[in-house]
Length: 220
Image (cartoon, rainbow, N blue to C red; front, side):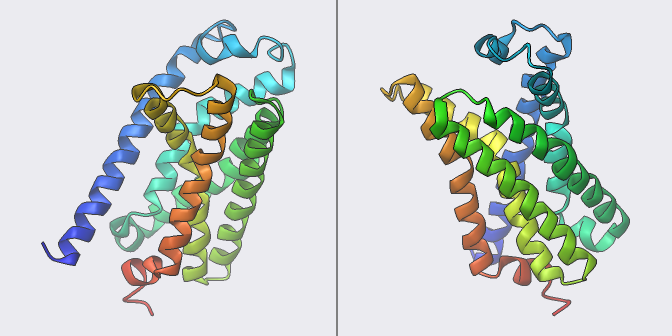
């Protein structure tokens, strides 16, 4: 198998994994459409559920998460980027608006009240702030038509977007392999791993000039 075929298979596998994770996120979100305060994750948030700011932030964050995942993924379709430019720009605008004005701020508020104490709260607050910041940089460099730098910041932003999936993946791994950790320790570990490893992978791809080679080769 040559490197080109291997690269294609790797990208297809990554896209399939993200789509599968997005589908699972939809399934996880559906129970909350009942607005039952005693369902699933909300059972652990009874001490803050009465706080309107937190409650509104929670439902906003949950219900727009799928839109962010899908529109973010569309940004990395080479076919859409070059053959459906309007869709690329339109979905990009939706992604940027939702992250900066809805998902990011709501995640920040939720992070302040996160389970797991200060260590987990710092992780989620930092994640939200970086998510908003990176997405803002992506928009800025797109308006300046500096597409390589725009791509770098979009990759960083989407890496943080995917923390919604990776957090649940790591929780699944700990449960599957019966890793014996105190629940609070496990939650703190997952809180940090969910986005730091994603960001490290994004930085690795940036250093390897993946955006330039795969997307912008014909333009450079």
